[in-house]
Image (cartoon, rainbow, N blue to C red; front, side, top):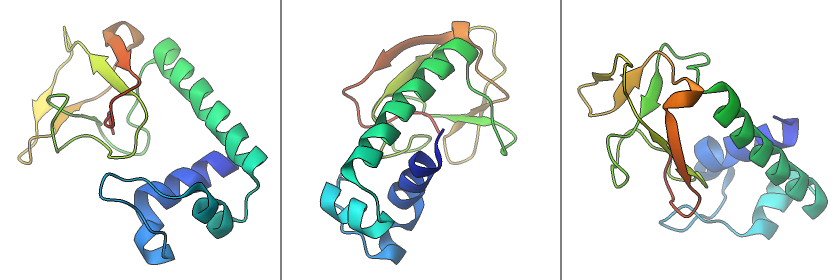
Length: 131
């Protein structure tokens, strides 16, 4: 993932409020505002979006790992309010099959990893996803 892609993700997921980025209730911001805050050109934003698309391909190929967390966080359903990020372009379907899955007290589903064969679909029109 490129540096610009990481900066955009951080802004939209974590620091929009403190940076003064106006966002709608469903997580949308004006492109011009994002570009101005991050001092990016539109071509760099487009390149970062292409990079994210390649990240989705990598997930299909390699599965999901927890990164710096101890578990991969999953939403229990498509319309769940827990376990999903609000500004994700693609919702991945996961078949837990033989995975050891635990339900946290807040309802988030946790597993150590999601192998590629457990990813059973992708819905690009949903505004949710795995975290």
